[in-house]
Image 1: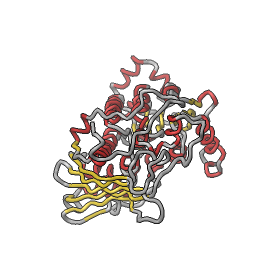
Image 2: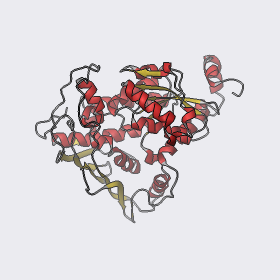
Image 3: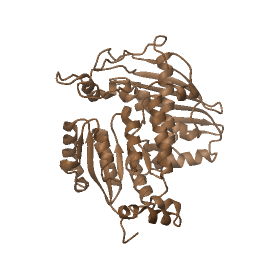
Image 4: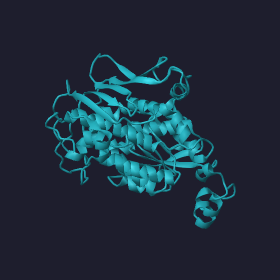
Length: 418
């Protein structure tokens, strides 16, 4: 491969097929030391942070394309990447020409069709299924932020694309950085090797402060633009706190248990969030009681309260021989948000383990949606129920001036799980 670029090699299907039958399977994905090109869809705070993490953790990678619904967001954050003194070490590898700055609701399609090797997805998560599907169809490796959807229909769509990504041997890393954090990975290995015995009870917590994206509406913004700019307050875009944030902790417990729960009963509400357009239609607290196939339970607590309230973000497992917070039996490593991008590049190049965690993170997303729907409806919700659910929160039309009426805050007994 030293005298032939990966792209020209892959343009010769017969030669590629012949070569692929005689080299080690993991090197089918191998790009060697050739420069990788990345493009970002969703140029907000998390998106630009992912670019910094990617370029900090990897060599011979550059960012060459950006896509966003809003041109002002794209240009503002591109300028930050290029000129903020904190980015001096990586700025030279952000090379996005005007023709590779895609704006609009179809911008993700244009980026996926461009000459990039990696598609990074960091839009509000309601869009994750359609964006991931497009990236996989284009044969791109993917970094996608968690969660991977906000409703059962979307997550099943993501799962189908995830299975295709495995068939294509594409690398997929999701923003569940604890799976790449040395303290967690070493502790998980020890727990699974019996150091605390068999798990008998588990706990997960995300007890933090609120996330508000906008405090007022510009009169020029149509309904859809307003909801996008204030995306964390609307369930169709963010999934509610248990899906958007608490997924981190629930994913750790699923990872530990090696499975998803089979049922959940949850309760929640809005204790302090005002019933207005700024605060949207999500809860500010949800507590859930999950049951795993072996009968072990997960007690899950998440809430977003303002001010100087109690804070706790983490996990706990109790075993027959001891207990752990899921990271206390490991040694400290590098920034896990950098480590996940290092693993991404190593997997693509073939000089590290193959990584594709799309399915387990999709299962963790669906686990969180189970609990949200149980809290909203007041029902016990099973895995089978959510996997068959027809709930689809995505609009049928997209446009800056598109009229949208925000659904009311869900009330158990009135809200219906479908």
